[in-house]
Image (tube, rainbow, N blue to C red; front, side):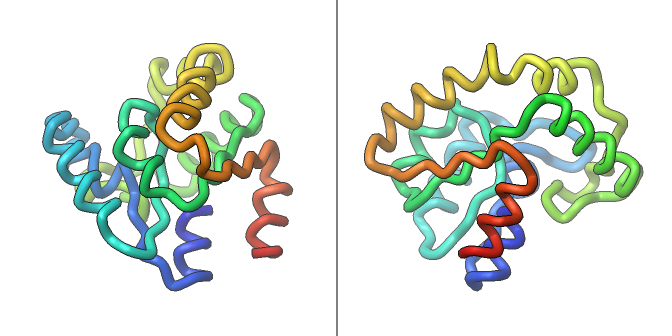
Length: 153
C-alpha cells in the first residue's frame, strides 16, 4: 500500500526493512544506526514509510501527517505471507534490503502475526497516543478497505 501511495502522489517511498533494519544476508543493523537513519529519512519532505515497530514511533510519528494502519485479521495476514512467499521465494522484494531473499517464514514471525492483537497492538496504540496525539490514524481492517482507500485518495 505504501508503494502504491508513493507512486500515486509522487512521494519518496521509504521501507523500514529495506532502508533501516536489514543488511545483506539478513543481518540486523545496529539499533543506534537504525535510529540515526530513521531520523534522516523522516527529516525529508513528502515521504511515505512502510513498516511497523512501535520502538521507533518516537522518531516517526511526530513527523507523520497521517498514519494508515493495515490492521488485518490474523488469517488474512497469514494468507498474505503465504502469497508473498509463493510469489517471491528466493527473490529480493522491492521493500527488502539487497541480499535478503524472501525466506520461508520462521516460527517467531508467524507467532508475531498470530499474537499481534494481544501482544503488539496495545503498544502501537499507546505509542501513537504518546508521540502523535493529533496525527490522524486511518485503520483498514480488510484488504478491500485498503483498496477502497487507495481508489478514493
